[in-house]
Length: 118
Image 1 (cartoon, rainbow, N blue to C red):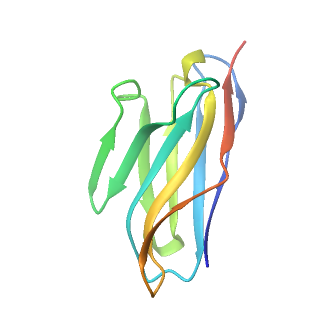
Image 2: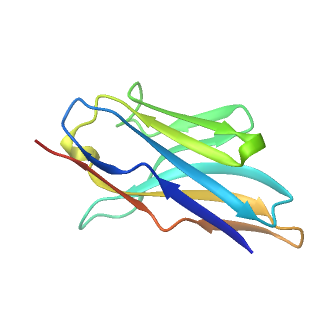
């Protein structure tokens, strides 16, 4: 069984920063990719940033403000969010493509709320 657990969300003022963390635990043979997604109220879930090996991708709306990074030894992926805007308000989810020893599957965390407001 593999679990992803996010942390680091909260309430922040516009222009502020937050760092999200996602720890993967359980039966992990290897991780092919990790990513952050978000879903604002009434909207579809969207990709924010992904990391696979040394390659990263970002949504246009967060380029230059967000940075995804990974600590393979700790099975942890981070999302550093700077210059936050009210439109960044959403539930942020961590996802990963992980081989659990039997098969490669996509796993999701439970989400962490990020609210950007005065």
